Image (cartoon, rainbow, N blue to C red):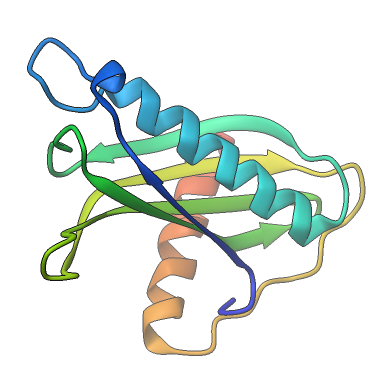
Length: 142
């Protein structure tokens, strides 16, 4: 699991703001979806199809002119499905501190069977279990 991720860093600009002078959630959702799609594509080595937007949590508002780091992980696989988790962290440019602002879950399908993902640590195991729950709920299996 620790080998199946993609990282992207970006800056937000005033044109990405909403009425509250914070970054518009749709901007974050689009970028998270794009990096998740790239991660799924690299993992299955084929063109994935978005099946379900499982869950999006907005934990902290993102200020305009913030630096945002997004990391997309494959957290669960089953047959030809992949559950992606994308974490958006805010980076403080003066201190380098990172703070999680959003977590996105997307379910993708691949044309062929995908390799099984296996967690290697306790932290990854928790992501795996959480990803499995999101996947089962998205497909109506639980």
